[in-house]
Image (cartoon, rainbow, N blue to C red; front, side, top):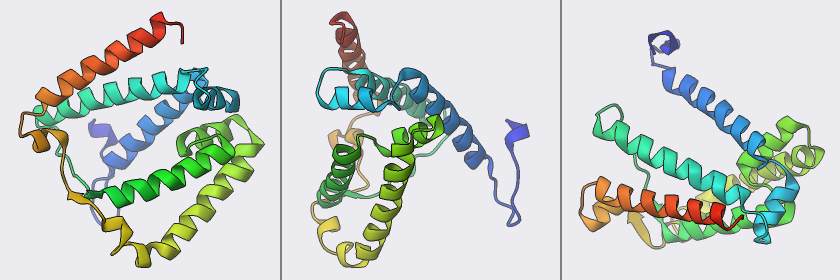
Length: 189
């Protein structure tokens, strides 16, 4: 770990960026190996005929959830929560869904597909992300005080909402995800 600690000019620790890059490369590699960067696999997921993407994402959620909360319990990390709202989730979901429906890729799989050399991801996906981000940035000043704040629920986690220990939510959710993954495998999906 000490080898990854490096300081930038301002004296700030850049190791979180280095770790983010390392884990991003690993995640991209696993997406590619799992087939989630292939258009046919993603369309199969949308048509509910191929559950590869769902299994990959649920496995990532399960691993990440347990890992993050274990590190939090051990005092290795502090969670930095961001405020959320129903309006922001709806707008984000619509933008994400529109791009996903038109091109058949999500941002993570676009990056992996570009790495595979898929021209549709490079031309359509990358251009779509840049244009979409630009449009959102241009509209943000008008949206931030209005629809993006509708249904504001602040910096709230499920354990805080239910007023329980983190593990009282993590363990049942982990069990449910594991059972769902096992069920999908047994069903041959």
